Image 1: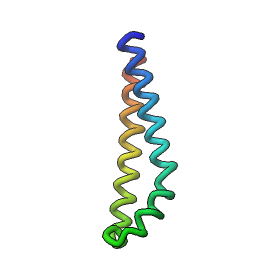
Image 2: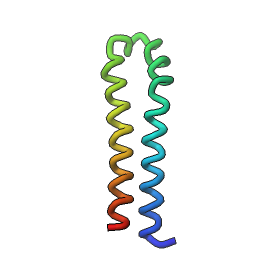
Image 3: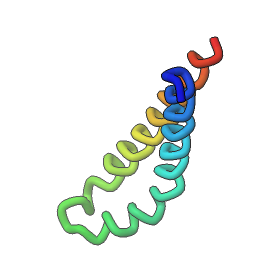
Length: 69
């Protein structure tokens, strides 16, 4: 497998992990709300998870785009 193929498959993996983060956020937030320290900071935690998922999808998309450019 060449370097170009590896970068493409790594981009696919990043997009899949980003989608998985979006899928898991509602389940994780329920667990985070039970922790006393994060009870007042749920919005910040949720925002951080969504940004993380978005950046993963963006990075994967950029890698796949640059592969065929």
